[in-house]
Length: 121
Image (tube, rainbow, N blue to C red; front, side, top):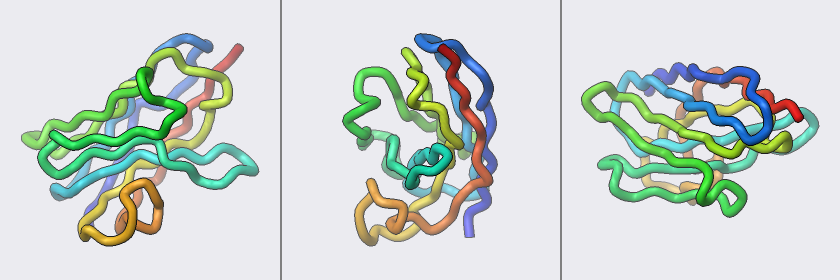
């Protein structure tokens, strides 16, 4: 099992930026998901084991960047031009086995506790 700890959430004005971090106890492909109150969890971004392969939800392409520092076992999500509809608890997840779809939560094995992102108008 991979232990995951997210940080970096907070309150930001619309149009602002935040960088989320996810410290992992091991190295694997990783993803970021978010869940707003009353809504289903949704995929945000994913990054492969080496960091060369990335994928994004359509709604964040061009605004968000996922990256990783394997020396620190840490994955980042740089979020720019934040929108109020992006307010949610953001979770990082580890994909230890290449099963299912990397854009689906069912394709991940371990989850962090989440960090809240709030975007004000």
